Length: 555
Ligand SMILES: [Ca+2]
Image (cartoon, rainbow, N blue to C red):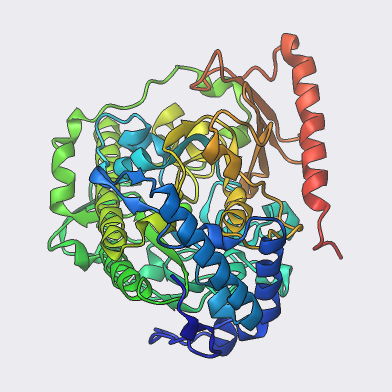
């Protein structure tokens, strides 16, 4: 519960920072007291006062399931909370106003396809920690990134704008384009949250940036404090093999965006993600004891290449020959435009079947290592006593191909690459599975609403919070995703996936009937029977792009 002493101004203790943010005083929220008071009063007016979400509203029952407290006890707590909030409104201290809001724990993996997780149906790669989060949260089966590689995807969900609204189509921060508009975590920081980043949230080069402890395209104003997790990456000691561009086996283990498997010596803490988990665990223990709520963003860099992890994580997938490759259809490339053939293929990577199978097993090893690190963070949250007052989100910046259509890695706009895993476990919400179309850009407005913060009208995502109460609801008819490097656009509804290259479609189109052809083997775009459907989708895409460009950033 709120403690009156926290109403006094300037009571924040800023923990030691790895690199001091530019505006530590501002980070504490002092200049934003008006905003917080506005939110607080608005909450009182519309009956959604945050006093209805005190930290101790719910208690954990056996097995970690939520149980309701007695109605009389709840009423007493509610009255007490209302009194406390009225006092808070009077005093209007930012820390005080923010103290009763839920925490946000945002965990994001890098280059993780949903198809690799056991909670999404994979029977070979077991991810018990993500499975247990899914068991108590809402698992979305049709969540899409807004761009199929790191830079634009992360800039989009952190800024709240689509890539073609900001024009951030590469590996840069969106700050020059958004000016002083608050990013996702910054919005929470302004409302009194302690906003922390551990490792990669905005774009950061992997493995290059991790090897040299580089902030990448980070945005310092988004955080109260931030921490990097340098690691050896492909240089880790162990049994390594370069799979890509190495048909004669003479190429040594290399860095860069290259398929390399390293079964490493040593334990979890040798590597970046082990350090990230350890830092997140420490931060949760520290922040749980403060009156301020926290927005903790934890970025894991696996399973991004190199596929490096302690050797034990690969054992379940050895011998690698037993890994199955996805079914393919001969001639499937014949009907798709050149731009639709992914930048990495079995052919141009010179990976024979042995290497392809090892790539799958190596990827799975990296996934299970990442999953184990997620488990440490979830355990820490449970130990902290804050699990019932924390919104936990798990996702990835985009998906990944593991040999479908002989495509590998990201960028493609096919399902395996454009779709992301998304699990949201929010206090007071029942677990479930939702097939509704959702996008990563929806996270900013959704969490703002769930935490009782103002939802800026300029944000381009939708509030998917209603899906947490009823997973059968729908908040959008289509999902929109782009691949700027191939000038590609994906617009998808329940049945159709329409992909177009170049805004005038001059580089080709693809159309898949996902009901009849869920693996997207048959491009129907050239079929006369589907000419009207293609024409309609071209029109819808043009309308979508026009809507994206109608925003408050326009000069
Ligand atoms: Ca990525």
